[in-house]
Length: 283
Image 1 (spheres, rainbow, N blue to C red):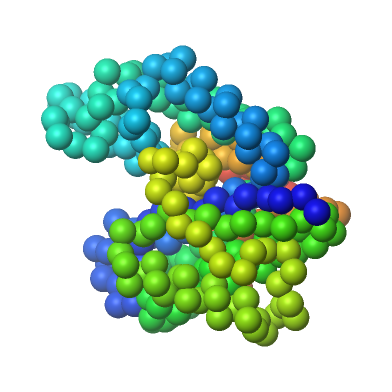
Image 2 (cartoon, one colour):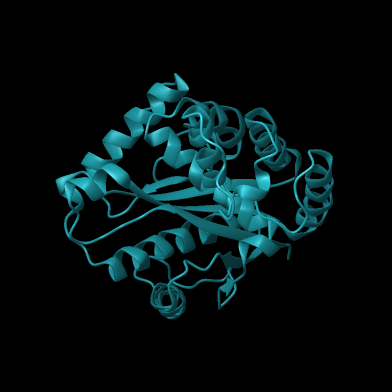
C-alpha cells in the first residue's frame, strides 16, 4: 500500500452573519488540498529547497501567496514596504521573482507520478448559502475533503495522512479536528474510511513546504474567482492540469471543486467563472 500526504490550507473567511462590507472583503471561503505520494514528497522537498536558495529567498522565512499581493499593492501605490510586516523580508525581490518562485514551485506538482488538487468553496455572497454556523461550515468543508481523498485513493489502494495548517484560532482548530474524528467513526456517505489515517495532523506552514503549496493553490483559486488576471493565469497553467476531475468528461465539479453547502446556484456561478477563465466547455 502506497502512502500519500494530503496538505490542506484555507483562503478567505466566513461568518454566519455577513455584512455587505464583509462579503466585499471576503467573497469566498476556500479550503484547498494537495494530495501526493510520500515518495514523491521526498523528491519535491529537495527540489523546493534548491528553488528557495536560487531566487534567493531569506532562509527560514515563509513566502505566503498573500504576502506577494501585499508587496505588489505597496509598490503600485508608490509606497515603501513597511518594516516589521510579515512580508518585509521579501521586499528585496521583484514582483517577477516572487511570482516566478511560486510558478516554479507549483510546476513540481505535474512532474510526479500521482498528484491532485481538490477545492471546497463557500460563496459568501449568494443568499442560497444561508446563515449556517461557522462550526458547521468548517465541518462540512473537512467532510467533503475527506470524502474526495477517500474516493481518489480507493482504486489506488493508498493510505493518506492529512496535514492542515492551524487557522490561528484554537476553537476552529478543535472543531475541525473533532469533526474529522466524528466523520471517521461514521459518515452518512462513506461506509468506512479505509484510505485515510484515523487522525489528522496540524503542522506549521513555515516548517512545511507541502502546506505552502496548499496555500498557493488556495490563494490562486480565490484570486481566479475574484477575477484577478495573474491568479487566472496561474490556475490555467499550473492547477488545472492536476485538478481532480471526472475521468470521462474532464469535469472538476463534484470531483475537484465542491461547493459548500451543496447549492445548484453556487455550482452554476463557480462553474461559469471557471469555464470563462479556461475557455472550455463541459456539461
